[in-house]
Image 1 (tube, rainbow, N blue to C red):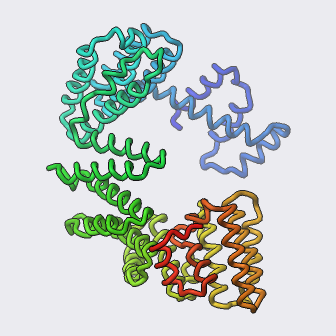
Image 2: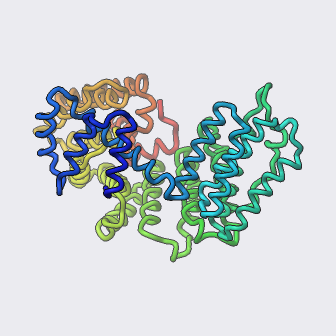
Image 3: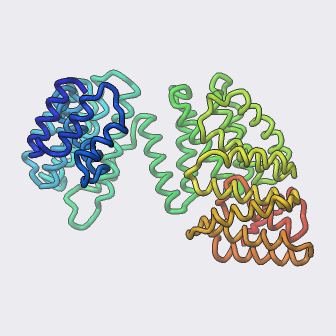
Length: 489
């Protein structure tokens, strides 16, 4: 902190009535150090404040320093001033002080335009729209007056003369207004939903994409997957028809393809999956990047595992290994993890249990917060050792899994149930008894863990493995049966 900042902080604490308080003394201790030494500070605190809660003192001091610096720089940066005005606008609005809000909105608008705070303009103009609607009632506002508001926003944005910022800002404003006022159709609503809901469709590509994405998400949440895909396909078609594509909107184009292909695979629509995979394959060569290849391989893995095409997954596995070997520093952690787990699953399905164990062991050494990933690694490792007939090592793997899965919760108890069954199966040599154990496990998972049973283990499908064990089938044949029939239950 600078000298001025330190002085301001002392004055700030004085204003809080804490001039001689513990926070001030702690701040002095830190300020006097040339280099921060936490151990020395803790010793001093133990001597100076033996009965004080040290953690609370440190946290409160840190939070007050942040508040103080925010205040110190409030009048320094235009963007900070606008943000402060937005806080004031929200506060006055919640108190229904509409006549006081409007001057603050005008101040914020003027400041944002003068200093080119473009990203904050949609929020300011949205508040302008919202406050005027609440203060004067949209029922008493003509269609022409409402359209004037949109024209005002258009004129402001045209001054920016930046296509991308223009479309993005217009989109935000349009979506704010359309979805906020369009959904307010209650009996006592003071808005005019008939006009708002029939606003003209967005005129620019970015707005159209975001509008379709919103509708697609709403349909997906309602479990209307067909409608969700329809809106995504509309976005894709708009991108393909636009003269501005694909460079500028390539990430959005790729995202649409990923969602359509993923949804088609999940619904076992193999024809549509193939159609859009070919679209992805025919992208111009200069659009292909390391990240694009990783997405493509992930979709190929999903398609191959779900459709039972293990020749394709084997070919994809070779490409994925090469990608990881040559471009690891350029790939983020999640991509590396997903490619590695897919390679491990492919190795398991091809009965290459040593390779499967190598990849899973490397993954297990990393730290994950994702419970589904932890479950996948631990369950697959146990199954790989079981299939390899490593009965000396398997008991220690099972004990480790018992400790990991013993906590309550459906995602953990799912793994605990599988571990119990495998423990029993590993201790019997009677094949008929093993079939009984696996049949009972299938029934238990279907009854009590159905949602996890049907998709928790990422690329790996334990239903396929159980089916192969119960009916003495090759895993490849079991995958094909799952492709051709609905064997969820």
